[in-house]
Image 1 (cartoon, rainbow, N blue to C red):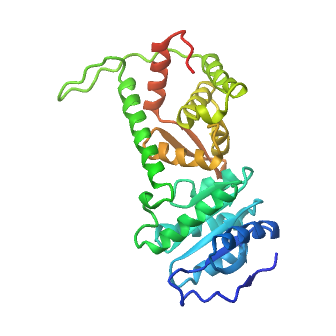
Image 2: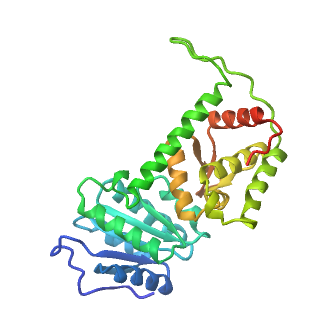
Image 3: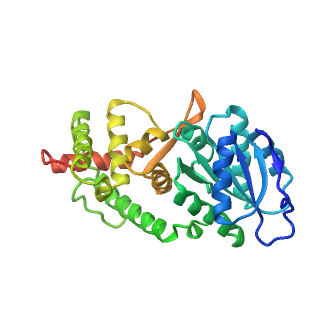
Length: 306
């Protein structure tokens, strides 16, 4: 793919820096161009993945970077994502990574728990929203790593509050039902009841069957769906990569990633690097989350858990 600078590549004359585009193919670059041009933002440079790293290294001021990834570029992609992560954390860059499900694990392993906005096989609305986030953050000093500055600030605040509520509930359950807490004394933990993988699988199947009769949007509950999937995997002693967990969430992958980041941030889920593959991370239940879920299933007994 040919790389070239647009006539508006001087980043010094505008209060709103143009967007730097980097893509893994000509087709990917065209998708990125359409998104940026539809938003009315200037394009500062069109670069290959290989050229983007050098360009970031000589940026003189904060800028927005859009990475359009439709194939795995291997080590070069890893190096660029590492550099983007450092730029975002230093508040020198606002970044959007648009990727496919096939490359999601490699991307999430590098920037999945950061302030980088990841969108997965997005539609035009999601692209516009992500671009709005990047340009807004650049105009707001100190906001590049501020969750309150996200385009979905109100929704993310609600998400965080919901996850906090879930965390509080699970914390109570992990101490055992009805376990009293007295000042200066730790609660006595009840025995965790046994739970079969078949029980969890039946619940997951029952939840998926609802989509045969009603719209899935009526029952979207990504936190619960991801918990069930990780619980089933834990019982079966399986590891779950990010991409698989996003599928289990039964919502668009971009939405699932936001939930995942929040659940990890609240300590309900844990991210584990794959010891055999540095380009992949696994997700698992935190011990207290696992105990709480098992006690929950123990309490409801044979009643259908949907």
